[in-house]
Image 1 (cartoon, one colour):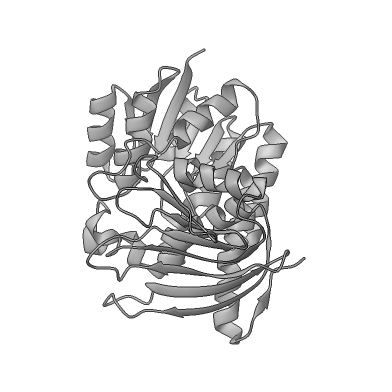
Image 2: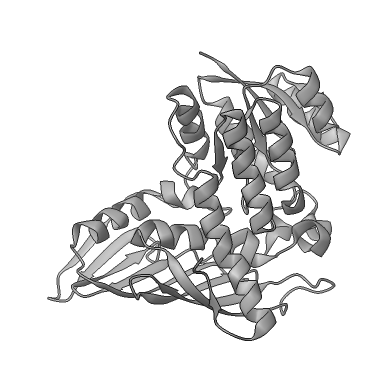
Length: 342
């Protein structure tokens, strides 16, 4: 069965990820695209033989769509996703899934109400080194996990975004959150996935120090504590001007795992007995040249629809990762450790 796809938002994430990956998936047809900038919509439509729209509501009303990718500024994620779900389409929404817990709950309810899939675009779970590390941790190969540090930083979205320095990423009313929403929520999702553990407390320092003429965060450091008592740090930054850092290090009783920390070996296991095992598992997805060519997010989304299976990162999972970032904001506001426990 060929699925009819619509992509709402034709900026960089759609252009370089969603549209490309839908195009190479033999089970889909890109039927319609939408962007408030007519030129962008028409350019994408011409390239993929789709119909162009500037109003997503008109698209949802006129087109018979099976699934939608929501590739819009953060403040629109919830409302557009809910409209698409209510129109009878499965939804793949970019991260962060929403700007509040209430919005996330509304998205989850809309998916349930309509019997449709809701997936959040957290691609780090599909990176081979991360999957291998999860296996090693779950098998007990590194023993008890004591601590971790995970980071995601680069020079900022202006080099990536379709609008450069004028991007919505730097506008508080559209982005809601900066580096933490762009990068930090990815690592929040990843560390939950790796450890198969949930976090109960977060403390955070968040600053705007690298970017001018904006009040959006560009540097954040979080301290996290899990249900199992694992503590560690999460860093999100738009101030890494020389080279992107997307590394994670897990410190265990029997070994230390270094993920995406070595330029050649995407996973290095350093055992307490002195043994070192290096895995060459392919490059992580990156905005830099040389990153892996596919995020596997689109393929997984399509598979989940065709096989009527829950996506790996459904709305509930997306909400749990979002909660860590929202908790960090509360920590900054109150200058206290924030409890994530319900």
